[in-house]
Structures are given as C-alpha cells and as structure tokens.
Length: 148
Image (cartoon, rainbow, N blue to C red; front, side):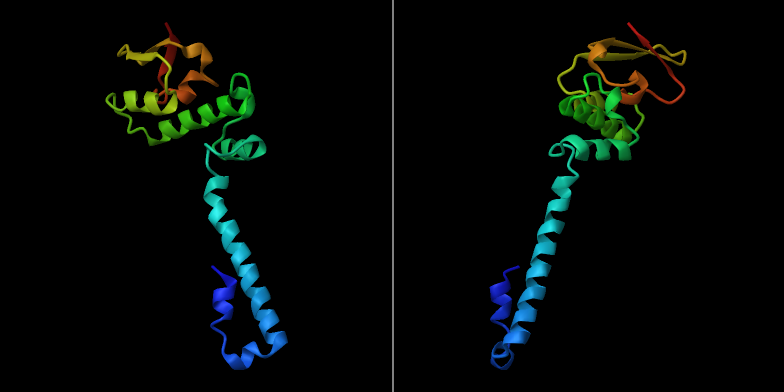
C-alpha cells in the first residue's frame, strides 16, 4: 500500500484541511505498517527461517524440546522439527515410509524393516537422530523399535 497514492485520492476540499489530511495520513501509515507485519508472519513461523527462541516456540507448539535434539543446535533442532512434520503427514502405509525418511531425515542412510511381530528393526545412521526413535521415524504407535 502506498500512502501517497491514497492521499492523492482525497478530494481537493479535504486535502486543503491540514488537520484532516494529517489524520488521514497517520491512519494510512499505521495501516501500511500493520500490513508489513502481516506479510512477515509466514516467514516468522517458517521452520527454515526461524532461529533461537522462535525455533523453540515452533518446536514447543509441536511438543518438542530442544534438549532432545542431540547437540541442541538450531540446525539439529530444525531437523527434529522437520522429521516430526514428516511423520504428521505420513499416511501410515509401508509405501509412504521412504518419503517420510527422505523428507524427515534427508541424506541419512536409514533402513526400516517390519519384522511382522510388532517390532520394527531400524539400521543405519540412527545415532545422529534426535529424541526417541519412535518419535522421528515412521513407526506405528505401540510398535517396538529395535536398533540393528
């Protein structure tokens, strides 16, 4: 919104009234500042752009704590948040497991094998994963996770 453009739309009569024009300009400038804040909201809650306390707030809203994210760095905690988001989008199918791993823990070589007895075997780079493995890997509730 360009304040000057809207001020030009005022009739000649009210433009000649300094108090009215001043109030109109002040109100429009506040509206413009508010629109700038509103436009910044998506970035402020972006997992990729958030840092420090903002990242803690995003994680906290998801029930995650920074202390559970291995070294506690922003990047590690961001990965923990990404993994949780990927799990929330998982459809529960075996076919969807690969997509969840690619999105949640990109670049990590992790294998998941269903043993068919309410146990899932996990192999690969699991030491670097934050939190409980069942919280970041696509494992159905109630299924035990075994490291291989």
